[in-house]
Length: 128
Image (cartoon, rainbow, N blue to C red; front, side, top):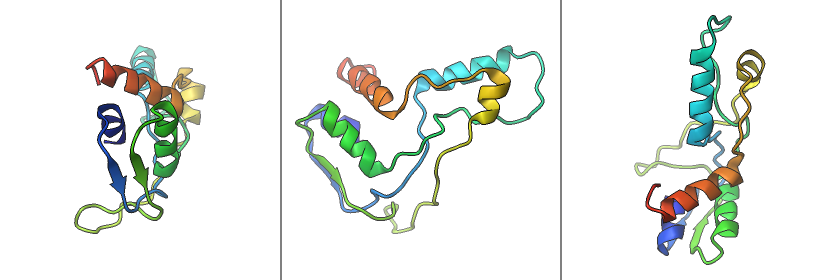
């Protein structure tokens, strides 16, 4: 929603939630990890985390978007992320991608800022 607001020139200011951290993954990395898992003839594990292994806060993500879209009128305040009904989102963080890296040769190519830049470009081109 922050990228959409930034690209369309809409203001978006959330009073809180900036401390929330979650491991986002760009779609190209997700597809790459899945293909690597499908192409592997046998597996020692049932589960692989296909992600970046990093968990920037929503406040950090908003800062990155503002760097990529300097005239964006977006912000987020500190604190936990809360849903509309006031329920606090479950605390999350970075996923351990060691198993995917070691077993599948998976290596994310899109850290957060690069993924945001690609998503912004796709959104501007009507593909987002």
